[in-house]
Image 1 (tube, one colour):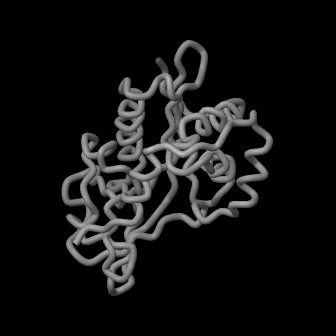
Image 2 (image 1 turned 60 degrees about the vertical axis):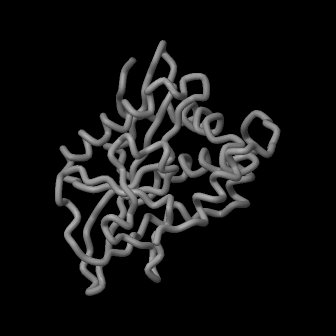
Image 3 (image 1 turned 180 degrees about the vertical axis):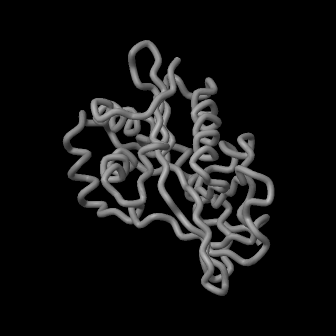
Amino acid sequence: MIIRNELKSDYREVEELTRKAFWNLYVPGCNEHYLVHIMRDHEDFLPELDFVIECDNSVIANIMYTKAKLVDEEGNEKSILTFGPLSVLPKYQRKGYGKKLLEYSFQKAVELGYDAIVIYGNPENYISSGFKSSKQYNICIGDNIFPTALLVKELSKGAIPKGNWTFQESRVYEFDSQAAEAFDQTFEKLEKEYKISQELFYIYSRSRVF
């Protein structure tokens, strides 16, 4: 197993593994592979924190980071990170590869001078890696809303000063769904189906902590 930076020659393979990892997981089909495709050229993308796991000469996992920020009530800003997608090929899932990729990327993020990460994710997947509810740090998405899926990890203790913060992620996540659908047509056809995980995602993405 090797963890290394993504190479240009990996691009299509990473997009394919991302598609397989997310297909029918949150909605019928997925858009995450299109997000990977457009993220690499965005100003907020951090190529230094774009990592893959290579196993038996194949790429089996990938994580990509972008710049984000926290803004307090006085307009003061704090630079932070967010990541996603974090993708692991289905046959390698639940075997610790995703966690290894997280831990490695955390270390590299610290070396680059970053001290906090905020993500949208399933709490069940990230609590064991040190993520906590955004409510613990008074980080909302506006209007005092604290989504259940908004999670925070301090890379150093006390990294997030006390205060009331609003999370602002990169605009790369605001993409054209029609362009994503057109991009998907360039891949092998897969059937869109309903899965129970989609209902869980619906609940997490629309619930909040009070």
